[in-house]
Length: 286
Length: 286
Image 1: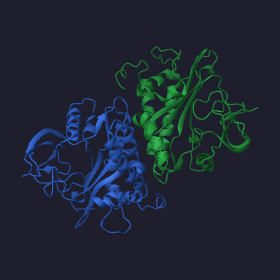
Image 2: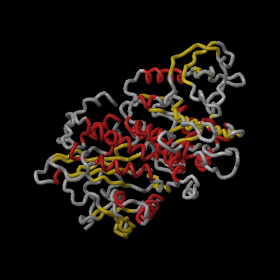
Image 3: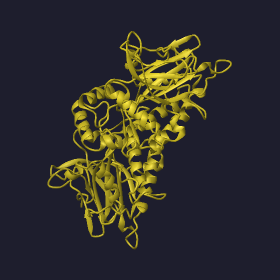
Image 4: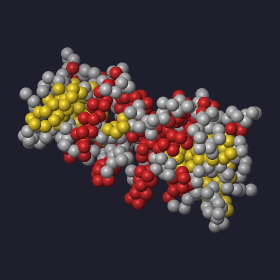
């Protein structure tokens, strides 16, 4: 029984008769191939990445596992449609808190057609992409009986100060409150040898070296579950994954300086929160 | 006796009755304040940077020393004009090889006025900035009796492949030749504990942390002198300096991801040359 994923926070959603991804509830995620070049590009990326021997195993684990394509009944009722078969990144999480961070100060690539270039550029300037090197594309924060999930319109209007606050609120209890975020989960989620920061630093080291791919408009997805331990207060290892590869280009021997710069900016935000969860020294910035 | 600097490779030049910088031949460089906002911005940057206690001493040495302003007769004959008084970065070098690398995939800043934004964007897309994260703004390569100094028009047309080749030619003998660059000076100039790569890595570590300034349209200048040792074949420590601060903005608590990304891209080019001076494994890239 396929159904729309419950915890998808960005991108096209399979609701109200629209085309969107589906999950099978036992670990697989089916993403419909977009009918323009984007679908073909994403399939090309997954195929090439899967068979690329130069990807270190640790790095491979940041990407969704790829299991080919499959013809499935599309969620919009249009009949059979090819889907990418990927790992469901939220499998096993009961009430995940999720944030989708689109990385890079620009989402357009040098060879982009003029209309696509203009559309991306306008969004990059209007959102926080140009200023911060990344933007939030969507999020939900769960805590016991409370969920905070801003609407698409709210997300689009986040400014730099909002982003700074939301990265703190993402690891706070009582996330729906307007009070100053308490960051009680910061060290458990962001910190430690297996935390988000350590994982982002691993990715950064790879991006400093790799010249195989340029990831335009791709996202870092972070998910964790507060319900992961017996007392329900200490989260499981946070999952950090890269997603959305419809605009991946051949690196041609050049590093992905656009992605790397944005990733370093995100890393600085996260490490500031860990250094100063009470937000004393950063209160005047932004 | 003030005169135009002999080794300036980019920017406005004090020749043919135009306004440009002057040197006194004993270690000082006089840069005329540009009459629009750029002059005021650059002076503001130097003043603020000079008195900023959070700049590590090692990092400070990458910037030209600043000695206030001085009213001097302008090189264009227009009378007295305020000049920034800076260290002459080529003082003591007899026949420097110099390259000016404008860092960042974009030279416009988020709050730029529309016409300036459009002008910068067009240049970034036309040059290698968008693709490589940096572009060459000018260079000269000296070797014994031979100097290679491409014209401004030639420099503007460099593509990614040219840049790759020029960074090799910059550390080769017989630089004016069209033969494959031999990179005989690569390890002496780029390598070693005090070489260009080590200096760029020091800068990178600072840019990963510093959120004080965003350096739009600034350059990394690299200069070295083959004439530095007794047999004339082993260069002095190469000088790596940051220059051109007419478009420096307050970092507001965010790292300069645009500069950092471009710097990392340049670092990768330099380290590729050191790993493979014969250019065997990179011959298919770009």
